[in-house]
Image 1 (cartoon, one colour):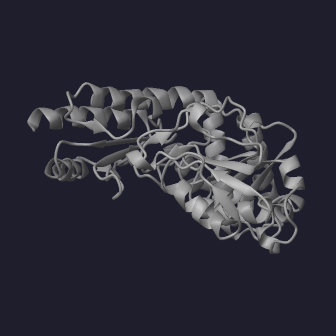
Image 2 (cartoon, one colour):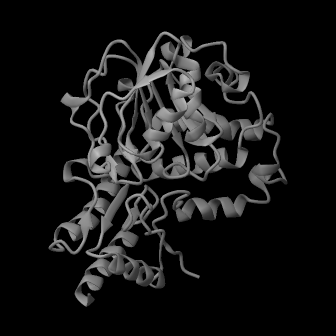
Image 3 (spheres, helix red, strand yellow):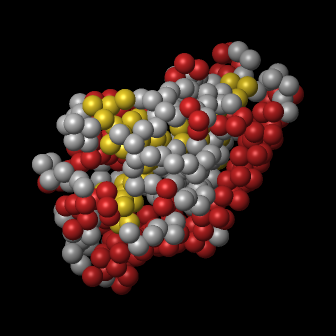
Length: 360
């Protein structure tokens, strides 16, 4: 059976080479006579995998020495309450920039912990754009500023982080981490669920500046404390060992394919194929996001009618395309083109879109 053209929003496509390598090692990893899933997380064989994953993240993203990399569980959703529990004291206010559903979920959790504000939001347009940098309403009095760097549902993405954020900047990068080089030094903390660009679901990567770590509250349950995981090299309790193993393999694949800059080039080429098809369709395909806010990870679009949307999705599925349904809040279609989605799959989708327009 041939591989599907997988455009799922997450869990998402994994590199075929990574899957084949894991398949070969599945029942006997590193001549242990056991699967990596069966190893003790205290064993030298697993600890080597764990530490290599952390080192690879630091190398691929050029993480400065004054940051730590943690491998946690619970997905990005667990980070939503963990962040204010650790960094939002009762006399402070956190600023959540609202650009989509995930930033809404993040602030909703933070409101249960302490005081928040949203200095700017693009909700009035159904999140078609990223706010202009001169409209952000930043303040030195904010405990921290929280952003979602890429919005999977609406297909928008922050293009620029090069400004004075005035207070610690924390970013949910679940859907675009390692899709391009990142100016890590602009952030006090980055977090990302792995299941879009880094591997399968189950592990969450946190990159955190040590000075932010130093100011974290100690009046937090042990497992919800960043310091707990930092002090124990993310081995305080049993980690998601297979997910970390797959993370390491995906990181190796990224390195073999040009690193973060290689991913930028690869993803730009894929996105340009699809956006060009939308822009040259004379309005048959209508992009949700404004052009200067377009995501290079999630291409969202509608057709002229709900009936044509339905027909497009039905015929696309029959042609071997998976995961093109748009989220219910936007409707229409969405092609998620994370790192592991091939140029060939994007080219095939482009050709299908052109042919469908001709026939309809």
